[in-house]
Length: 123
Image (cartoon, rainbow, N blue to C red; front, side, top):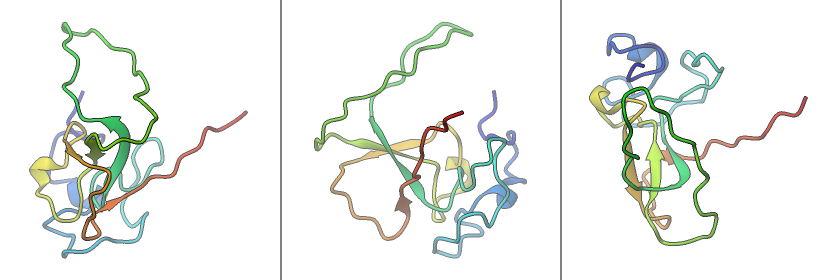
């Protein structure tokens, strides 16, 4: 497992995402960088992605043990929710799959937070 979907090195990051060294203090059109293996663009950088989950500690696990991904509460609340993926104004060291921050749903950003619309594909 690596800290970024393309591997560990920060040298390749400019090919996959916008961060403080190449973002020039603004967001960029989606798809301007290489996609991940699932075809998702901007999974690292550009703007943080709002997530449904509340911020809480990762579950404790033994080596090589997995945990079921359980859906969080769906009700609207003022509990901190997760932002993931990094943005155009964070350093490369924070552009990792595991990096996350929690903010209240009423948080207003300066353009470094967004949504990733998704849908289930049907065969």
